[in-house]
Structures are given as C-alpha cells and as structure tokens.
Image (cartoon, rainbow, N blue to C red):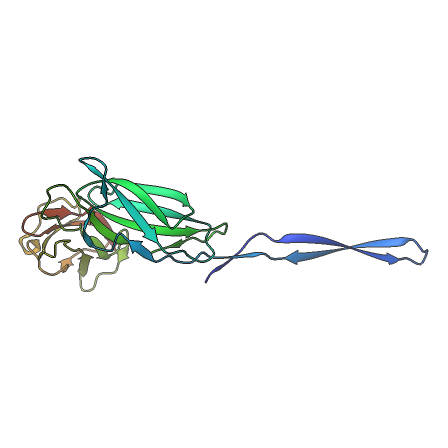
Length: 241
C-alpha cells in the first residue's frame, strides 16, 4: 500500500530556563511531525456482471433504462468516482463524490458499456478498480453486436522497436451472445481508414504480424463481426523507432 506524506506540521516548543541573572531564558526548538495518509483500497465490482450478455436494468422509456451499479466497500476511502463509457462512440459519463457503494444511472438501450470505480481520499493517490463490460438490453433485440476490439499491443501512443522490420498487433474482443467472430484489421501510415490488405480480412486470430518501416507513425483499427452484426474500434496509433 502506498503511503502519501502530506506537508509537515511544525510544532514550536518553548523551553524555559533560568539565566545566571535569575531571569527566565526562552529557548525555541522546532520539531517536525509527519502525518501520513494511506492510499485508498481497490474495490471489487459486483454488478452488472462482467461481459453480461443482456443487462435489462429498469426500463424508463422506449430508449433508456436505469442500471444499478454496485461494488464493495474499500479501506481508507472517503468517496468513489464512477466512470461509464459508451463503447460505440466512447462517450463518457463521470459521476464523482459518491459516498455509498451503489449508484443508479439512466443509460441508452442496446449499447455496450464499460464501467470502473476509483476510490479516493484526501491523499494524492487514487486507486482504480478493474474495468467491466456489459450490454444494456434493447427492446426486441435478439442478437447483439460484438464488443469493439480493445488494444493489447502495441498500446496506444507507444514507441516500438521492430523485430526484423515487423510488429505484432494484438487486441481483445468478445461477443455477448457467444457467437464466433472474425476480424478485419485496418493498418496504414495515413489515418487507419485505408482499404485493408487482403491478408487482413476475415481473421480468426486476434493478432497479426505486419511489416513496418523505422521512424514512422502507424494507425490501426479493427472491425469485429459475428456474421450478423459488426463493431468498429476507434483508431489507435504507435510509432516505430
């Protein structure tokens, strides 16, 4: 556990002694007292379940449902922040200063989401939980699109030292219905939207080795398909050394 040391508190101690002339002599001594604040603990997420296929929530309209988020209490914590990300457009909802271990939020239906809790106190160190994903059910939807691919390697913005002029791009994805998926990798040094090479189409594995040049910025994205629906990731970048 990390310990955050806050600015020292200075105590002034007055020591009174007698001088030869009988008059009191005041001697000032400085003593530092260090106050420490422990980093808050990491919560365990409870609900909605990770990768839940069909989180129904409580319908509030034709297009929205209220979803109840729950997590465990963490040590040395004064409040929690809840971050919810729409995985279709990466729009983020941030709810801060939560003092309970649950929160209901109204969200759009038929959308994949991720969520995370950050524990906070008066210290400078915050502690983030794992990130969980779920699909919020939509009226009349029987088959959901896969979760958009998330990068494993290279991480966004990383600088990579190619091996023999090659780099392996890898990602992760999942289908909430359990359908078999395939991938198309868009990869170029322009914008990540150029027509993919033939060997980048209908991939079964979630990784691919690509040829690269040195000192170049590359862009990539992945389209995941379950045969009925598709999900497109955002464009990621990395630089070669």
